[in-house]
Image (cartoon, rainbow, N blue to C red; front, side):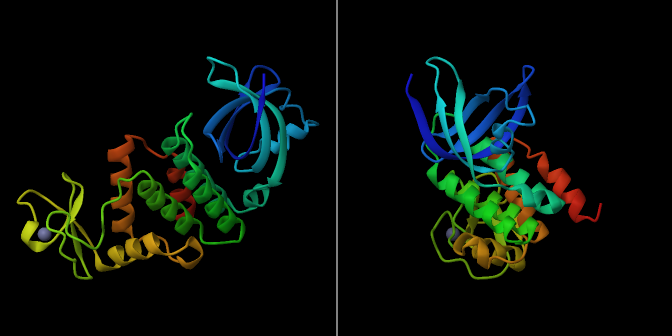
Length: 246
Ligand SMILES: [Zn+2]
């Protein structure tokens, strides 16, 4: 059985049998991959640290024909996310990023841009970038990579440029609209500050986005993701709790 070599992020791991973990990886070449890490639950195992959540690792693994669960052969840490454990909001934001990657990157589909997004987000968290900003940036960019992020600066009906300022979103057709094409049914409004944040985060590298999404823009991102994926991101609850000073 040939083994595959790849670079990966550990998205999550679960105890499995007595001494093993099931590890869910986001690999550079093959997207989401699930492997069993044998005897990794032993404290002395080098696989224990190489399968820590959010770690960037170099792995080799065997695939079993007809099975979604491969077997981890070797794992070596490229960059540990362990320092985030000392900073709960940063750790929670990392969990949001990992959970989004789980939702958006199904097994068996190459997801190189998502791999690079996760890499950028974790690197920024390790550099001390604002935790909520990283989580919101990931929300926006996973939607963009999935191809479901509407154009922000043009009317989705006629294509006319939309003036800066408050914008109007049609939640049924999922597009921004000009005043001429505002539907009669209810619409969502995004404040000028919210629209500015969405514009900036769509255009700038994460390092240059220094503020978290304003509440209305954040709520809009979550509604768009929930509408598209039908999934809730549970780690947000923990992050919000920490950010509220809990
Ligand atoms: Zn229009």
